Structures are given as structure tokens and as C-alpha cells.
Image (cartoon, rainbow, N blue to C red):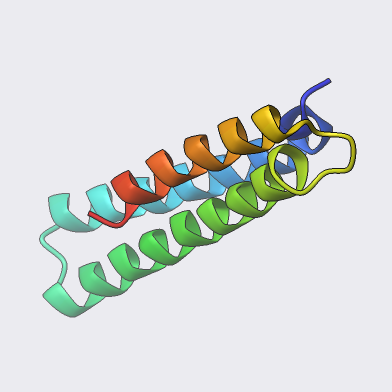
Length: 91
């Protein structure tokens, strides 16, 4: 079982909440709501996605970089994977 599978239900619930927030942004734009309202909704989505990213990065570090029993090759592969994702994330 992968480490993501261990808390799969929690992650799915979190993603569904984010999907609901994105839907609220869409509805706000369709309804021609005020800029401020829409900006607040988008900020909430961004925060929620950032929180999900933080959780997944932490899990990846614990399981693929810092876990006991990993070989140097496995640690390097885990670090390289994370580096690639973070580079993409911060562009």
C-alpha cells in the first residue's frame, strides 16, 4: 500500500472540497459577482491547493527521502522526484 493510499479518503475529501471551491469561483464569474467576492473565492482555492501540496510534499519526504531502510539510490530518486515537482510548482 502506498503512503497516499493510507490516507486516501482524507485526501479525496480534501480534493472534493477544493472542487467545490472552484465551482463557487465559476458560479461567481457566471453571476457577474463583484471582483472582491471572486478574488476572495480564488484566494481560498489557492490556499486550499497550497495546503494539499504541503501535505503531499511532507508525506513524500517522510516516505521517499527520510524513511529508515531506504537505500541511497532510493533516497536520491525520492529527492529528485520532489525537486522536479517543486521546480514546476514555483515557476
